[in-house]
Length: 281
Image (cartoon, rainbow, N blue to C red; front, side, top):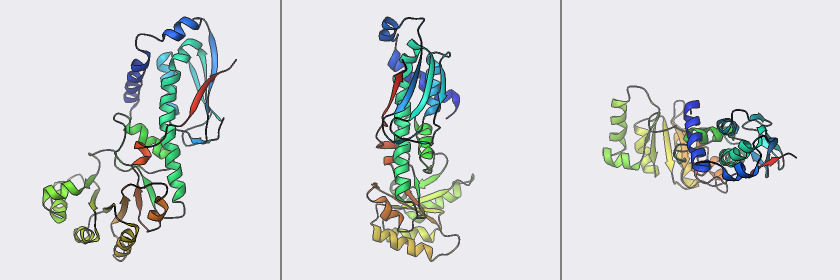
């Protein structure tokens, strides 16, 4: 996300929250009041979204000075300081909730991602995200996945070809879909095709795609798919597992030998991390 795009998103968030003015701060905080505050992690978490939070404070009042104590990707224990803010106290309090909304949402994604990455440690599998993101927040949420040590899949429909079941049906089959893509793919975009059975896997292998998505297969089926593809030797397609992956199942999936495990929950179901802003006396 460019700086201009992030600033526009922040402006929309502030307009939604502040509207015509923060009446509480305007009516209770003297205009001349200066203050300092800290953003504190109220639970163990992986930090993400510090730049967005900094920009929120600056958008409300450029006199507010934000000093990151922890950078994106850092592990914070409960009560750890994440940011320090100082400057005009009224604007500082006006910016509080919007800044925490960015930090909480993105740190929650980073924290859940790190849990998945930890769960597959020691295997060859990489945890990747999906396009199941909050509209308008995709670049931020995918950056949070990286902060949690995950790997980004495609950013959108434009930077990778992923042929799914509906595309296969519309094209007239696996081979027809891959042939059509190869004729049109003059820019050399990476190509992946989804299969839901070992029979479809054989169809896909005959067309030699770069990556094959094993969708909603059982662990034994994935293991057989890995064994089949491993026998092809160098230049074999990479294998990605997908479909209702959870922290309870991801280790067994990774141990089948797949190259990637895609997890929609990283972005669509991550709990918001608990952080608070405390004004120093």
